[in-house]
Length: 253
Image (cartoon, rainbow, N blue to C red; front, side):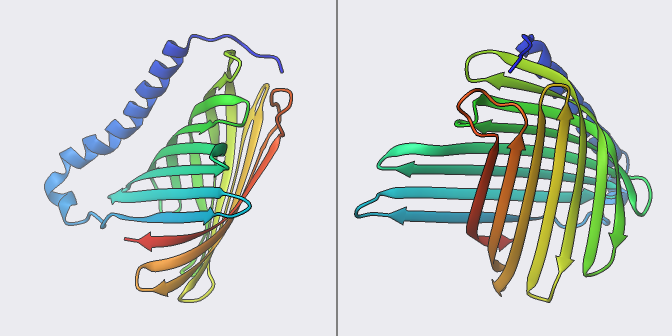
């Protein structure tokens, strides 16, 4: 795979500056309308997921799968933070290790339309890359907005910096397209489908997450999910496609 050398410090400075600029708009409006806004702020909501498997005997395997998501609304602003971690070991040897952090800010300028800024970081020890980090600015629209069915589509340009395991780096402009579907099948069952693609000059990354949640009791639910990721260009000896099937307990707040 062809790679491009880049100044990592400059790249990170740019990403942090843009991320700060995105967030500052929300904080500025909140401060300017503090007294009025306080009464209109929606409660924070989020969820924490945890799955753990430990086998012993002929094969000793341990798998830890954890996720956390927090969302807050401030008038027309929506802030979202998502964290994920996966660690699998067999016979005390790590066979999978992946971390993801995602920060997103939306500004809703009409009932269905919004602009967004997205900062994404992913570290996958066995992908041939040390990490990816990207920032995207764009436009989104809630195409379907019903009580039991909703669909959001969004897209926009961005920038991605990738650090390969061999020490090389790759930086490129990207086009990000994404869609999110939610279907409240019943009072206790929810199906969600998230699709995204980051199209770059050298590397394209596609992701798909399908999930079915079933409420057990109160704020506790069981979630079955299937994640697929495909990277168009990877170092020699590394597979382009990764999949993950997980069953987790979810606490919603």
